[in-house]
Length: 215
Image (cartoon, rainbow, N blue to C red; front, side, top):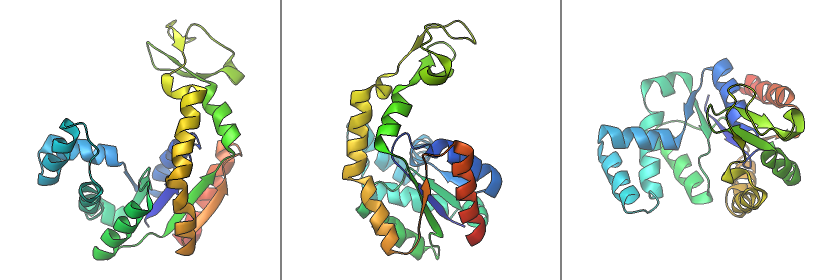
C-alpha cells in the first residue's frame, strides 16, 4: 500500500505520519533524508544533488524524482509500501512521481488530505514554545507563557519559524503551490479528505479507517 499525506504546515501531518508508520508498517519517505543519504554515500544522483546544494541552488526535480524512484524500488519499500510525506509539493512533481511509480509497476493507493482551518493553524503554531537547552515543546494555551523549561530549567523561547508573519508566509506558499495537488488527486480518484480540526486521536481514527478499507 502506497499512501500520500497532504496538508498545510501545522496541520499535524508529522504526528499522523508517525502513527501510520507504527500501525501499518509503511516506509516513511522523506526527501530530505533521501538526499542526505545519497550525498553521504556519494551515489551519482547524490553527487549531482550536492553540486546544486553547494552552489546554493535548489536540487532539480529530476534529481529528486530519481532518488525517490531508487528508494521506492528497494526491498523494504516494495514489501511494506511507502508513506509520502512532504513530497510532492507541486503539480510537475506529482506528474513525475506518477510516471516514476508507473515505470516501477507501482501506484498510489490513497492520498489523504488533512484539512485544517488556516486561522486555527496560525493559532496552533504561534502558540508553540521550545526550550533552548533540551528541545522540549510547550504550548502557551495549555502550559501558560513559560519563561523557563519545566523539565530542565532552560530558557523557553518562540522559534523564528513560529512567528505569525512566518506562519502566514508559509501558508501563502502552500496555497500557491501545494494546495493545487488536492484537485489534481481528486480528479485521479485517489483523494480522501479528513477533518484536521479534530483532536489528533480523532484525526488518526479517520485516517486509519480509510487505510484499512483499501489495505
